[in-house]
Length: 160
Figure 1 (cartoon, rainbow, N blue to C red):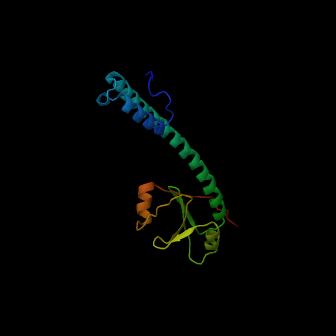
Figure 2 (cartoon, rainbow, N blue to C red):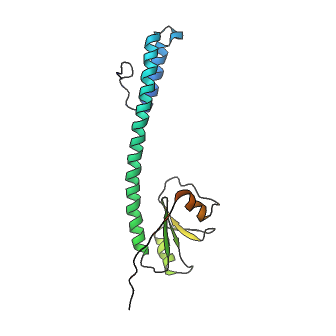
Figure 3 (tube, rainbow, N blue to C red):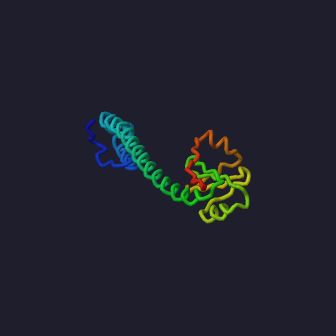
């Protein structure tokens, strides 16, 4: 489609501003040209669809980069924890959940790594999400069901 009216548009915000400006200028009820108004509407529909797809693709690329950064952080944290033989590590969404015995040496390490203890779930958890919203009353099985989970397995060196 050839764009004739909304030529200076580079974002959805620009599109909305330019559309309003030209809609006032070309609207038939305000003495404008009906053919230009139809052209404006067609361009708006075309651009809103394509800019939305472009913005969605940008968000997906950002999410991929964020996920890669999360995985690096997860690896660093998990490497700190695998020295303890009697803990369970599970990744659910962007959280690391850890099950360990109370009073265990691992608890001090977990505190150092900025894990928090979920009293109702009786599990430690870590995340780096800004504007985090609590899981609230949901139990861990509900959270697993919603987001899926992956247990971290590692080979233990056995001493003979």
